Amino acid sequence: MFDRIGGALTIDRLVEGFYRRMDVLPDAKGIRAMHAANLEPTKNVLKRYLCEWMGGRSFIPPKRAIRGCASGIWASKSASLNAMRGCCV
Image (cartoon, rainbow, N blue to C red; front, side, top):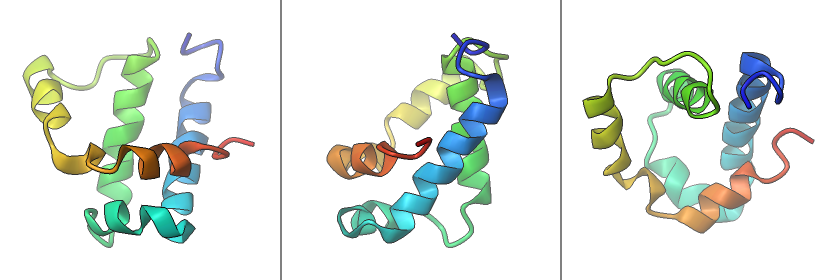
């Protein structure tokens, strides 16, 4: 799947678009406030995670990946999904 979607370049565009939309969509304001002002570390984690999830190279040790899933980042699922829509149009 990773290669079929265009690899890391496509994942990069998706994540950059996602966080751009998080900065402007009113319903994403709450979830954006959960992030630091500097999004680069967060973007890098999401890019690595999505690359692995799509079948690319493995970056995250299994125990750390499980711990990350329990965080409050998905507290506003609909806002996250809304921000994801239209990222790679």
